[in-house]
Structures are given as structure tokens and as C-alpha cells.
Amino acid sequence: AQTVTQSQPEMSVQEAETVTLSCTYDTSESNYYLFWYKQPPSRQMILVIRQEAYKQQNATENRFSVNFQKAAKSFSLKISDSQLGDTAMYFCAFMLSGSRLTFGEGTQLTVNP
Amino acid sequence: DARVTQTPRDKVTEMGQEVTMRCQPILGHNTVFWYRQTMMQGLELLAYFRNRAPLDDSGMPKDRFSAEMPDATLATLKIQPSEPRDSAVYFCASGTLGRYYGYTFGSGTRLTVV
Image 1 (cartoon, chains in turn orange, brown):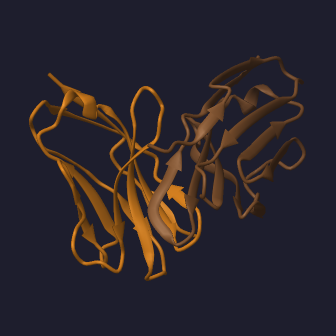
Image 2: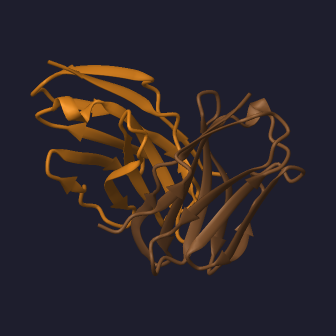
């Protein structure tokens, strides 16, 4: 079974600074997908960024980027120029082709003014 | 933007009552998930469907939970009888096999059983 681990229950960052959230996963498969979801206080789960395991290039979406290290089974999220609206719970998720999402425990990020 | 619609948004019920949660997936999506979120267990998969057929419901307590897709525009999750330990946020998500853009989640139903 696949597992996803987020070792940082809480993090904080000053507005406009950069923060990195960590995620590791365990799988014996070679073809899979990784995601970061954001859950603000409204509780809506919002897809932030995705990465296909067969792609070596790290995904980037505006201020959000990932550092995907396939051999190390690591998938960290970097948020640049942090904004107050980035305050949320962030979940790392793993998915095999055509299957379910497996989530990590989440990291609560607080952006301070 | 297309969205997954869940109703009700919040539900308070008494122990022993039947609860039905509804989900309207995005039109054209062929895969529907039900997840439960609690502080203790995090996000757990309860069941999922592809082309309206149940693929996996091993995460669901079979004696009291049931999930169905009577048609392509409606998924339901029913609890009968409800218990205080069922208090959680229940999410529905939909997506399309072969298009791994990530599944789209509804805004959830917060269930409180007193």
C-alpha cells in the first residue's frame, strides 16, 4: 500500500517570504501522480499543483513550485512571495494511474503580516 | 468554472437518525469519490465509483453506510443509523479516468451527530 508522510504539522512564514513544505511517500510503482491540495478555513479542497512521475521537470504554477526527487521519494512544495491568503492546511497526495488519492496528514501554514 | 456540488453544507442530527448526503459531480466526469475528514484520522477514502459502478467501498462501515450512484448526475452517501463517531466532514470529488489533472472536490458536508 502507498503511504504519504508530511512531517511538519505546522509552519509559519512572514508575508512576502518563501516557505517550503515537505512530503515523502512510499511506493514500489514507477508510474504515478503527485499533488498538493490547499484547504483554507472555508474547508474547500483546492488543487494547487500536480506532478507526473515520468516527468523530470519540476512543475510550477505562478508562485508555487515543487521539488520532485523520484529516487528519494520526496515531493516538497515551495511557496514564493507568501500572501495572507496562502494561510491554509496543505495536503500532499499520491495517486496511481486510475486509482484513488492517498493523502498525507497535512501541514497547517500560517502567513503572518 | 465547473464545480462539484454537495448538499447539505451542514447537518446536525440526533443519534439513530438516517442521514443522506448528496453530490452532483462535474458533467462528463466518470469517477466519483467519497472521503471523510476528521481531526484524528485525516482524509479517509470511503468509496469510489467509475461509470456509476462501485469499485471500492472497503473504507466504509458496511453495517450502517451505503453509497450509490442512481444516475450520472447524482451520488449519495447514506448513514443509517447515525452515531456520534460519524461526526466529520464528508467530501465528494469527481474526475475523469485518463485525465490526471487532479480530482475536483466539493465543499463538503459537515455532519454533527448529537
